[in-house]
Amino acid sequence: MRIAVASGKGGTGKTMVATSLATCLAQDFSLQFLDCDVEAPNAHLFLKPEIKHTFPAIIQRPQIIKTICTHCGRCVDVCEYNALAIIGQNILVFPQLCHGCGSCARQCPERAIIEKPGTIGTLSIGKTSDGFTFGMGELTIGEPMPTPIIRQLKVHMLNTPQITILDTPPGASCSVVATIHDADFVLLVTEPTPFGLHDLKQMLGILAKTETPHGVIINRDGIGNTQVTTYLAERCIPVLMRIPYRVEIASGLAAGQLMTEILPDYEPQFIQLYQSIIEIVHQKREAW
Amino acid sequence: MILIVSTNSDDLKDRVYPRFGRTPWFIKFDTITKKWQALENKAVEKSGGAGVAAAQFLINQGAQAAISGRFGPNAHQALSAGNIKMYTFDNDHNTVEEVIDAFLGQKLTEVK
Image 1 (cartoon, one colour):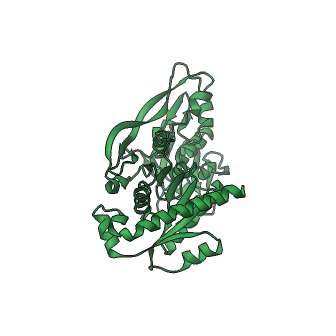
Image 2 (image 1 turned 90 degrees about the vertical axis):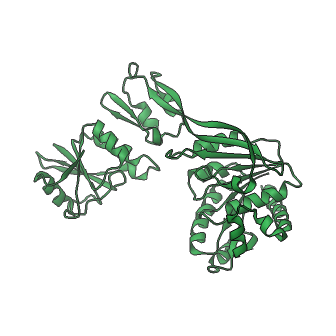
């Protein structure tokens, strides 16, 4: 069971929910946790894993062999990301726009493109004190392309654990899709504000296309307004948990505590949350 | 000389557009014949690399000068490599006609 914890809006409590859920479930299941928020990974601050292996995240970028290149422009045409331009007798490469897909090298009729590896970040794999596998990717500051790191981190994802928890980046762009596209369930964490609702709708738009089963947690319940609740009720999207807006949660998180360490009463609720997730996934599978 | 201006629409009397790569339209103007043509900017729909794609378009159109409010770093690099001179307008010049007149009167700033 792969569960991605996503939100749309940043700062709604994705990592808080993901880390607490993982720690509660690790008592009864074999589990791995992947922090895919490679632009600002922070789950390690709460899970405090012992990192055992680190290795570079690599992207393969084109290099033109000028003596072979005939300036036909095929590489420029096939590049979905406009990382190449043809100017007279020269092919210009814009490395920061390159996603490392390799289309240019494969499509070059003269085989005038070789791919050169470049390091864009770091992958770290370790274990938490609760005994579950932890992986995180970290994009080097100044590098603009997070998706290759997320893909490489997921290559290190093991098939053996019963549960995989993916901490998803905020937003609703490529890096989110790269994280959630093969998830069995997406757990959306939102807050009851116009901002929370606006970005939640963007995530729901993506999930309508990927047809991934999903449910919502409303965090900071009690602030804002009732628009989120109304919106979800109208569309029959289940609210799986509500977490109140409380100062002790904020101060505990700031000190690096898990939510379930701050409020141990929530442990049964996270176990119950997982039961609800399994039910929704099974219902969806039966419907197919 | 062929110059290309980033513009809001296909109309000479409409406003210029302040950004190069994501401009909805370009107006291509021949300074000798005074003929002009509106060209849609296909790069505007790109998720990334719009500046490079727009610069490639200008190079393919045979432009010798590009006029916009601002050029991004990738567009700047590509246009420089293509020997296309870049000029910027400011708030004093609002319509395409005004900007072209300012260019012909050598009142625009060249970006190096």
